[in-house]
Length: 434
Picture (tube, rainbow, N blue to C red):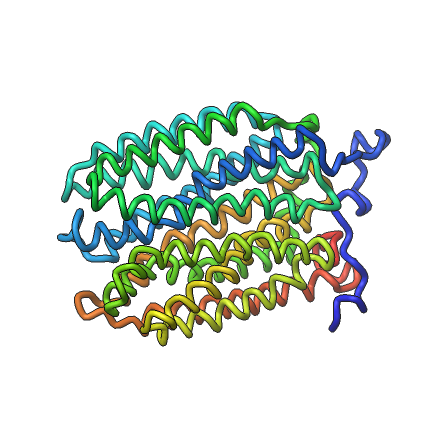
């Protein structure tokens, strides 16, 4: 059905909320821009650069650890480093999102940034063939620090934007694509020239500067209203949870090509240049994937955009198996980077559309992060086992990736249908018809 034939989705503040103590207060006014708004967006861009951008560059570490630094461990063991890191990035969101709703944004930003930077410098002290040192610093320390600052930095966009909230979040998340372009090129060259320790330290100094700037320029605008969050109603929201399970299945397979593309290029004898830049090419395309779909999301609603994005991502995951030539690998990296990046960005506003007031946004996105964290934790280690090294049977992890993405597509589509059913036909139906 064409988007134009269906009622345009409402924003959370346009819906009719349940009775609350503050319902007689004046309606919220959103500036949709201004100096503080765009400085906050810029700060969120820097946070996204240092956190999600770093995680999307783990393919470089996966390749370096597998072949050199931790080469006595199979790829499935090494992939736990990246998987646990991304698990913490998402799972900590349930706590940081709740604390954000209670007004602790500044404390979260300072403490999370500090933990992240300290752990990054500790990673530079890790010795070759000491797996636990890389795991504790990169997975646990850096991962928990990322999770503390990532979701609050995205949620604060809701304090300044309503009509253009989607594109504001998209701009913030585009920082992860820029980071995921710069980090692989930087790390690949530094590891080969100055070694692992000083390569990691150089990245740590860059992150320190960016996170210091973010802490100085980001600020909230609205007073906390935690009393407006009805957890009982959220837990009974059937379309919301159907959507979350769909997102979790999609994330289960989405990062497998991203984490393994550099190793794939090495094992298929791609040119040295492409081996170095394939992760950067994929993430450069992700920059446009994180911004262009968000523009259409503001026009039509996230559900109308995310369904074709997930469908194409699923098709491309199967196409990864045939991307054995240099040209095929470049085309795959560009297309998969764009559409997988689109899903990552759209998953945030799609989860937020179920909110009945702005006070619920941090909690809803936090629940989405927690749900998806478990599949993000296990997806890449499962694919590492399915690779069967040293034979490297790529078909098994690629099929796993495609099947899980298409399962997620089915559940997300079902959630969209449930959301448009007449009010009262399902328990605790949300107010947004996207």
